[in-house]
Length: 344
Image (cartoon, rainbow, N blue to C red; front, side):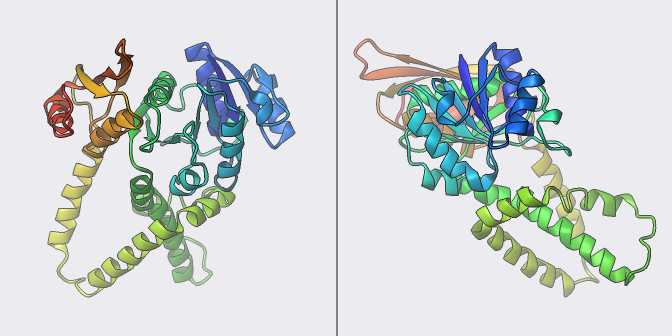
């Protein structure tokens, strides 16, 4: 397998390391910063470097790991250079802009929920994605064989691939990632303003925990806020409305506090191990998007596909998709598949 990594910072560098060491892949890389590229080669992150994204060809898997604002144009260049059997993906934390900008059948969006406090290829790690959810956002035109390849590639890096629609992804990320960063910044501002220029006193764990991500990587997060402005704006408006409601009931919030504790537990339990994997074999017609539709249906129900395999029939008109899902989720997965008028 040959992998092209476009952008060799923390995420791109970690993809390259994991692909080389765990998948025995040959990895060629490109970066707009020649110094970063030289550092990646000298550090054993890459097998080879390229002078442009196009010069990375040929490659079986292309991973676009450049800043959010540059991702659509670089992904489009990768798609133009990729061969007919190649799959192109990205790691940007917003998906709608790049999906709209790159309507190419080779492109399937991605977003690993992994990172570190430090940035740059010097901090790249082979194990960065171990056990991390890696969202994949196939569209109705995504070829099943390319989705299968990308799913296996992501799993081979140590991550847990999960399918989700690109609009749903951005709405969820606005709520669970982007809004918390905004609120952390606001909390720091409020604490500083409340002190009126005085020296900050020792703070307790509540303040430290709630503001851990405040001020993180300003250039990166400015691009994320801008790229997901619509969904994030809705979450900010909803948060403001909720804060105003809470402001009017400060003397009667015990029930709200208890309800929130229960809801937090439920949110943190999502994705816990559902048991050993069980195989489901699904007979499907050979048409574009059927595999993506299956993956998105199960992903929307919170059912993770640990692995998958496609076997076309001899006449190439139908095929069988083998899906491995947690045993505890298998009955529900079977019901969802049957509801699609597919045989399982």
